[in-house]
Length: 469
Image (tube, rainbow, N blue to C red):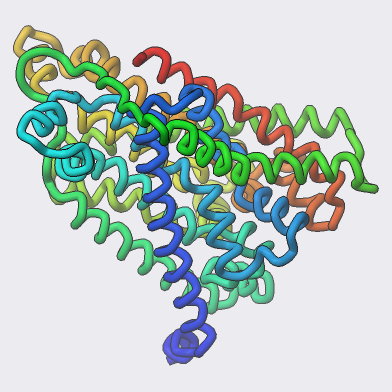
């Protein structure tokens, strides 16, 4: 009865409208941006495609709460639904763009050329040939955007747009052991399940691996003609909004902030902790994603689907919910594990496993099963087939998944605050601590370093592109 009275309050209806409205709008805008930018950079002769690709990936290195802080400090009117939609879209569109680009690189242009030979226009060929093959990557990326938005707290708190996540934090802050927060979290889990079921129905059971003789090749870039410079300019403007605004804001606060300081010892310790935890989380999540994706693609059964889908549920929960669950379990079952780096890495795997799974799954979708069967028929064991055939084929997807998890862990905030060993601080926690105390100048160095440590992951993605070229 108490739960029913809580869930039927008008406030819950308002939170539900806010959460669903922002989630749907953001998923639609990131899908449109991801597909459009992926096609422009990968399939056309737009100028500076290599540099544009690197810059379009760069927003992954800027945490959404840092992006929100940057926009609000420059323009206080960027709040509410429209401000949240703008900032979140600029922060999350790479989650769709990256898997779409990876899929476009692996597509064989022979199917499109066949459609052209049959008299289809380029637009019709894209809609009937290319877009269906992009569907797994597009749906996976959009699903990540929706799940990530359901769990977003810091950015929406700064943008003053209440959702279920911010309400859960308020409840935990006011009544640590109260029942209201778990009730609100259960609604959030229900929304997550609806997203998972919707994505599963839209994905279908089609296979998209290339069969037949020969190998896939790269397509000739589409000549944009007079649209070449406008397309380049539009992409640069988007990059300026997504990366330039945060960079300008942080440099501005470094220059004029009265609290600006550079404690080298503290900054060095935060950098070392951030890199070590992000690397450990990326390796652990990618290793865990490999069997999950393999079951989903190569086994394709009800139980395999259940295993894959269940890994997404925790991704929609706020970090504080996962953190509190791990604190409770560790204290009651394995007390020595409490406040250790191992427990923190486990939290990262729970929170960010879908990021690696989506990338690995996209790679496995395009790795022909026939090659595994041929290797097995030649007497190779399953382990040898995995090592000598499957892993080399999906190596780019593994690298992309690990890079995504590395970037996510390096900017994670709430679970790190709750589970990190005593005395451990990261760049994200130091930034949040300073910005919460309104010391914007002191927060700026940590935010800038968050961007700098993302460079290796970005270079990994660029190297993958050069290799395939």
